Amino acid sequence: MLPDNLVGLLHVGLNHYLVLSGLLFSIGVFGVLVKKNAIVILMSIELMLNAVNLDFVAFSKYGHNIDGQAMVFFVMTIAAAEASVGLAIAVAVFKRFKEVNISKFENLKG
Amino acid sequence: MALTSEDILFHAFAAVATISAILVVFLSNPIYSALFLALTMSVLSIFYFMLNAPFVAVAQLTVYAGAVMVLFIMVVMLFDLKREHEDVLKISPVMIAKIIGAALLCGFLVGVSWLGMSANQNNPSTVVAPQTMAKDLDKTKPVVAMADKPENPDEDLTAAEQNNLVDVKGAPETAKKDVPTKETRLSPDEFGSTASLSKKLFSKYVFAFEAVSLLLLVAIVGAVALAKSRGGTHHVAR
Image 1: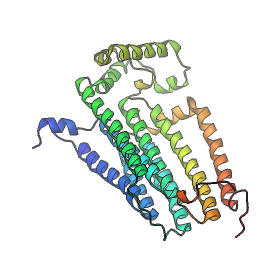
Image 2: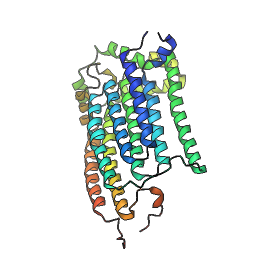
Image 3: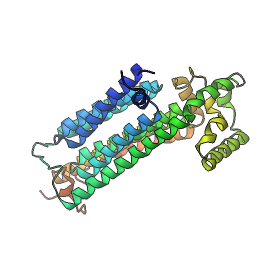
Image 4: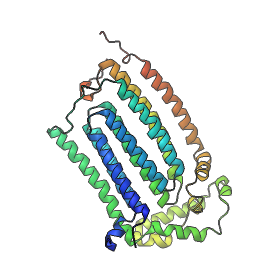
């Protein structure tokens, strides 16, 4: 079958979760930087928050400390509040400008 | 040494999560982005189950994959986004700089995690922790009593000192000097259970818990106020 070296590398540990979380976080950063649609930018922010949550839970398991899960609980609550307020702002902006492309409303003065 | 089913599941789901996250960013239709984001969040909840965090996993499913995604999809459907056609990868100096920046961040995060992995294989301090925990289990008091007990400053101090020692002297000290703190004394069955998490939430984090409830109230009021307003403080002459 697979060589022992590769099996040892594929054996799931804390660092596999860290690598996955790093990937998801950088994809989220990339989305925030590159996308022009305000709603997709909010989605990318949610992606970044989820990546951090995965880190919290992974450290909570491998460090045997349940505080990480409590922190995820708070992050989730705040992310939900952030999403609702952010989307409400997006709705207001869309009503005002008929547009969700952020490059179209660079000057937000009334 | 063979691959366990957990390993195989992890890698399969990690591939699904990464690909759907990439699709969130690269698809031009926001509805598809939202659906792939829901997929990513569902897969993350599977990871939480694998990490002994059932409460967090179910909360992830209901709050993120349920509520937040419904909100996103509803807002996307409110908007008429048919004429949105953006070129994600339009070549310009700013875009190249953004791509390079994101790639550097990705390389940094993944590289640090990967290097940490090779360091961990030489000195598996995270693997040693359960044994120390099991050894100390018999001389611990019941978990309920510990949750009610106030913080013991001496114990925390020694733990902090140990951490400093580890930082200064480097990795090889970690395995021997790993002193279990109060939290590490939970038994393996107890760890990650909803009961132990809620004990923590309602004792140590009770103030934060109440503050979060206040924050949710403010968010509700703010969202309603924002959505009701007709394009901000100024009316537009249309």
